[in-house]
Image 1 (cartoon, rainbow, N blue to C red):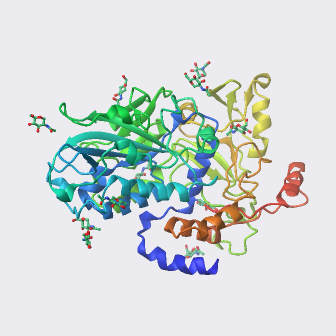
Image 2 (cartoon, protein in one colour; image 1 turned 90 degrees about the vertical axis):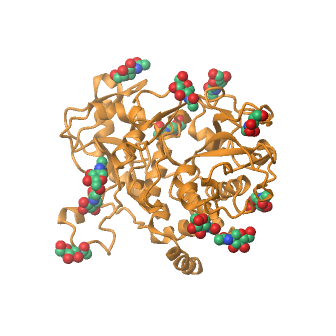
Image 3 (cartoon, rainbow, N blue to C red; image 1 turned 180 degrees about the horizontal axis):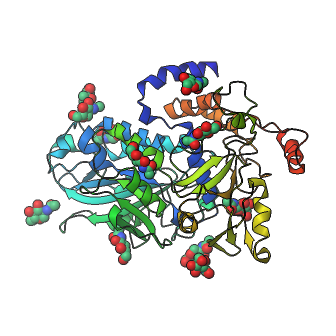
Length: 491
Ligand SMILES: *[C@@H]1O[C@H](CO)[C@@H](O)[C@H](O)[C@H]1NC(C)=O
Ligand SMILES: *[C@@H]1O[C@H](CO)[C@@H](O)[C@H](O)[C@H]1NC(C)=O
Ligand SMILES: *[C@@H]1O[C@H](CO)[C@@H](O)[C@H](O)[C@H]1NC(C)=O
Ligand SMILES: *[C@@H]1O[C@H](CO)[C@@H](O)[C@H](O)[C@H]1NC(C)=O
Ligand SMILES: *[C@@H]1O[C@H](CO)[C@@H](O)[C@H](O)[C@H]1NC(C)=O
Ligand SMILES: *[C@@H]1O[C@H](CO)[C@@H](O)[C@H](O)[C@H]1NC(C)=O
Ligand SMILES: *[C@@H]1O[C@H](CO)[C@@H](O)[C@H](O)[C@H]1NC(C)=O
Ligand SMILES: *[C@@H]1O[C@H](CO)[C@@H](O)[C@H](O)[C@H]1NC(C)=O
Ligand SMILES: *[C@@H]1O[C@H](CO)[C@@H](O)[C@H](O)[C@H]1NC(C)=O
Ligand SMILES: *[C@@H]1O[C@H](CO)[C@@H](O)[C@H](O)[C@H]1NC(C)=O
Ligand SMILES: *[C@@H]1O[C@H](CO)[C@@H](O)[C@H](O)[C@H]1NC(C)=O
């Protein structure tokens, strides 16, 4: 452990701030994934980049761009759009259009810059993150074009697209999964252990292209043929219940800013950054807004009086509150972590229709929220957590503009930084797997993300929830559960 963290000290200075997943974002991302588990992957709203316009054209058609791509995966990018070019002269596939000047920018041969190399980077990322804590869905959106060059330096030797892509690990394919729309995220990630959806967005191979794609279609989904996909300009997104996988991209007139970026995600679209950033590090301005669920920089970390290192500037109230930042509310800007003891209205949902929300007239603490919903309209309502962008949107629509927020069924009472659905007694599912599993990852070949993950165990604030004897009944119940509490989870 000590050695790893010493290593960590050497590795971290090589990385810019934007290249590291903050613990807050990792916790937020995991919580968002977990509430979505029972819903179909059609509801995915992730963020990503267009590799050609954002990376290759600005950082070169070489390994530097692939390094940045890896960093983007590390900080949570889950969709990549890119062009693949079939060289009609040499009969092989590559990442560069040799008929344009752009492709010579930074180009230093195909040995460090070819499709296999790019897929290898993805494979490294997915294998390191193939854990209950970190596995998540990823989209590869491909546009196919023809190019030509008889320069032997441009040879890649990758003559079959399917042969090359058969090395991509954890990829879904239409041969085994004809329809993806109705697979739940939980089944996709942990039942079938899939991660990636490779999609041919557009096929622009020339009329006289000598390449026959039909042999490859067992490995790729084709937009609107074997997978329903909507790709809209960011300005044209329509917030409706999705009937296809939805992607949005920014335009030259309207490059993404924090507001338009977030609003696409909230609307249920995956946001693909397509306009080049002045510098790739500028992406850090958007990273806090990569959720349809949480407000930027939430969930605020847990601080409670069990910690001696408490901030002496905390108000007395904050110091006395054991349940500080352990429960979630929904505000017009997204979810926030607050004290479970606040008195707030509760968001209740109609049994059988999760997009039908009603707020309680009175205010309650988090612990009373479940009963408050159950008491509404003869038991026709329950206490939910919005589990898709569309459900969250439906809730947002009934929030009064002056609201401080309303309770949703999400808390981190059982273990700090582990956000779970199911009321105060719900347990963190990761309590037992964490230590052994992450440790195993650490021993596997060195990767920055693995080091970061491991060291966050040490760095992330973990704290026990103290429960005073003289409090109400449920707290005694809680105490019994907490006696076995694992000390929070790493991010
Ligand atoms: C998902 O379904 C499981 C099994 O039915 C249930 O225990 C869990 O609470 C559900 N999660 C959410 C967020 O609704
Ligand atoms: C890639 O190309 C860019 C632009 O020419 C250059 O700055 C960078 O050093 C190159 N990286 C590698 C690994 O060749
Ligand atoms: C270009 O590639 C050669 C070998 O293919 C390598 O020796 C050289 O360092 C590379 N140049 C840059 C700038 O990466
Ligand atoms: C493509 O990249 C792979 C993996 O880095 C490498 O082994 C292979 O030699 C490259 N292809 C060419 C034609 O250089
Ligand atoms: C998903 O939809 C397909 C076709 O509509 C159907 O054959 C399949 O049984 C469905 N799967 C599930 C799990 O509902
Ligand atoms: C297609 O054929 C025309 C005429 O034979 C030729 O000029 C053109 O370069 C070809 N296009 C490609 C992409 O090979
Ligand atoms: C798929 O079809 C929808 C509706 O017809 C259309 O809006 C969308 O642009 C198509 N998607 C692609 C990638 O062509
Ligand atoms: C977006 O960023 C600007 C400037 O940093 C800030 O004033 C604004 O509040 C942010 N918008 C949202 C929705 O957070
Ligand atoms: C985070 O919680 C602390 C109390 O622990 C509070 O003082 C602070 O204002 C909160 N930050 C945000 C951004 O809500
Ligand atoms: C407490 O507040 C003072 C003045 O606002 C500030 O200078 C100091 O750094 C704060 N201390 C901590 C531990 O945050
Ligand atoms: C669910 O409730 C919403 C909001 O009240 C309503 O618009 C929708 O039609 C309802 N759906 C069903 C299937 O009843």
